[in-house]
Image (cartoon, rainbow, N blue to C red; front, side, top):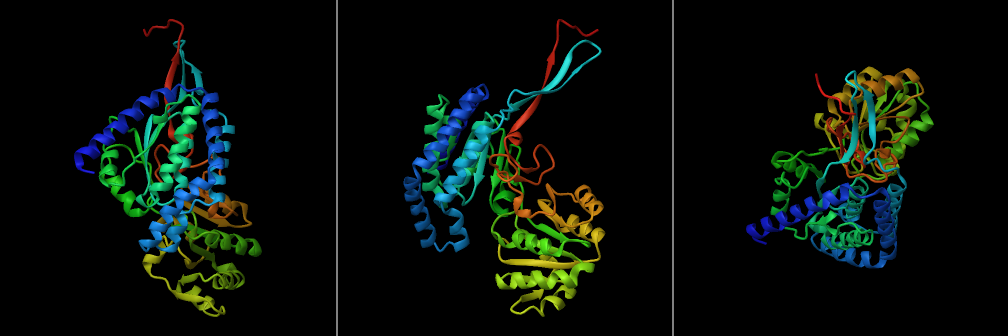
Length: 426
């Protein structure tokens, strides 16, 4: 597709989204609920068809030599499709927050001032690999009364087209505009450049993918961006702690799945529990083939674990997002050093403390500067679905507008409303 055709295509998608957003903003809660339930029904009824389209993407990916973990991200298994359908139903069951007025206060002048929750308008979503993101973004867009333009990765184009067609079918069945959710039909990279520079149509851009993609979007966008660059998540094992629980949680946080941004990449251990804890978790990681990159003190202990793959951590390892069976391990004096280390090296995504000391837990929650901070739980819970948001459109490590998993509320804004009875300003 040549440049003029791409520009024309994106302007068409933009103007259609803008028109659809006005209709979505005034749609009733019942209408949006109908669309979401219909989408869940369509997903379940079209598992075979979706998998047939997905098979084309998988075949292309393997032929192109895509690494198996990346191929895994592309898969639309029956379980993935069912999770998408459940997410739609969970969103449908949630209260509709659009139009809510909060904080209404009577002023001395007689007017009452509050804030109303309203849709953002049009968001653009740029994402890689996982086709289920198409449904997460579309369902959140419907629930929040927005319109969206979706640009999935070229590696998932057939899967995304099939999913987007079901979304539009659900919208039409609920008497909502099909253009409320549009998929960019071309894999031309120039389409991304257009999408992120259309402030006349697009109110916010949400990139979801690798660091390179997000850095490019952040640098070139002419509209606001909700983003996170990487997920260097920490689990800190405190003194005192329940050792058996700490082993269980540290294992899950790292090995339940290696590729997500909320997997733990760095393990900090208080010196007082090292002798009891580290050999145990070392044996668990060794059995699962996890490479451990440790400080000198940690290496000395882990090297004695049968079958352990242990190497010396470099300075770069403390900041690294591996997305692989690799973890950095550092022994710290205690809570103060752990918090300082996390605030220096963390990507401010998700960090957890495993402790039986209530005051330590409270300090960790207050002082660790991350989007999600946890006590005695796996970092793998940092997810919109697990947080009860129905679905998430991404996880933000920004501090403005939205932070952490971005669900319905993150796709809305507040406007001031003033209620009067003829008051005039003196």
